[in-house]
Amino acid sequence: MPQNPAHDDGTAELATVLGELVAASNKLTRMAAQLTEGAESPAIWRTLSALRAGGSMRLGELAAQSRVAQPTMTKLVHSLVERGWVQRIPDPSDARATLLAATVSGTAAMEAWRTELVAAILPNFAGLSAEETATIARAVALVQGRLDGAAAHDEGTKEH
Amino acid sequence: MPQNPAHDDGTAELATVLGELVAASNKLTRMAAQLTEGAESPAIWRTLSALRAGGSMRLGELAAQSRVAQPTMTKLVHSLVERGWVQRIPDPSDARATLLAATVSGTAAMEAWRTELVAAILPNFAGLSAEETATIARAVALVQGRLDGAAAHDEGTKEH
DNA sequence: AAACATTACATAGCTCGGCTATGTATACTC
DNA sequence: GAGTATACATAGCCGAGCTATGTAATGTTT
Image 1 (cartoon, rainbow over the protein chains, first blue to last red):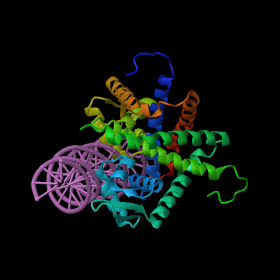
Image 2 (tube, chains in turn green, purple, orange, red; image 1 turned 60 degrees about the vertical axis):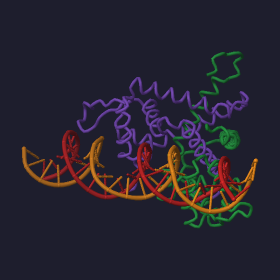
Image 3 (cartoon, rainbow over the protein chains, first blue to last red; image 1 turned 180 degrees about the vertical axis):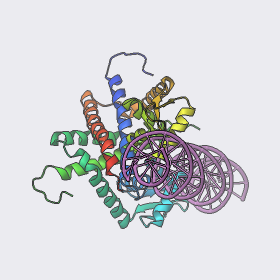
Image 4 (tube, chains in turn cyan, green, brown, yellow; image 1 turned 45 degrees about the vertical axis):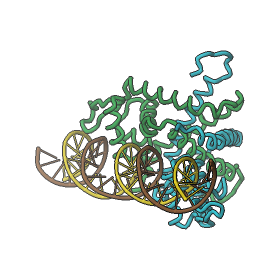
């Protein structure tokens, strides 16, 4: 705990903001899940999204990016492959590993879901001014950056 | 659907931002869950948080606020009561209903969790300037407002 | 006021996403 | 070539989410 307020660099305020940020994120995620019910689950889209963002990668890496344990990712990939949304490509340099790539239909499905979801929540955000939209966009970009940077680090952070 | 682009009020841009907002939220929620593993689940904290924000309320209302189905909330409340974090109070005006209130220890547990969580993610956000922090704060406030307004509406929106 | 409809919550039973522990095959190292 | 490390798969569990349905209290109707 930062017991000594050597020089107040706004840590206290930042902490408050982060607390609320997480709470709001939790709520929004729940809302999104509820609105697109019947469709596939958030985990599916999160995984596809990570694959799109990071390009083809191995299962373990994808698990780290998506912040789930490796066996969880094995399951997710299984169901994604079944749906034809992800393709397994043997890694030429390592017979143990397989590279994973989003297929065309996988990408299409993801974007269709995104469109549907946005359509569902858009009414709630209809009254935003251009300036407010820009504020949210900037905040999202800031948070995104911090999240991406974190994934790599944590690999070595695990105890044992 | 707003089919006619009568005047471009930035809907397209807003849609993009919302898509990314949801994706980032999903990721952040996952990160938070992973960091505080071993502790209780996000659903527990989300529920307690809703109770704190909205004050004592009936189970059905809490379910709506927390955006889960009623039976799901029944389960959650059960485990919260077991932990002594929520108290059931018979509703004097309706014998079928019970009012739910966060206990002192429930509130304390929630704040402890929040502190722990913030401590865990704070390093990732350490480099933020005061201005960036403010941007995130404003965005969170904006989103929060839209989320809160939505819960009530949806009650009547359900088909059948 | 008896009967019916509605409402508020509980129960049953299922699925899925998350975890740990462990197995198996390939790769590395000496 | 034996032993260790790595990449993924399997097994088995738990919690959170859902629908469908049950039960008791309330409201409504004649």
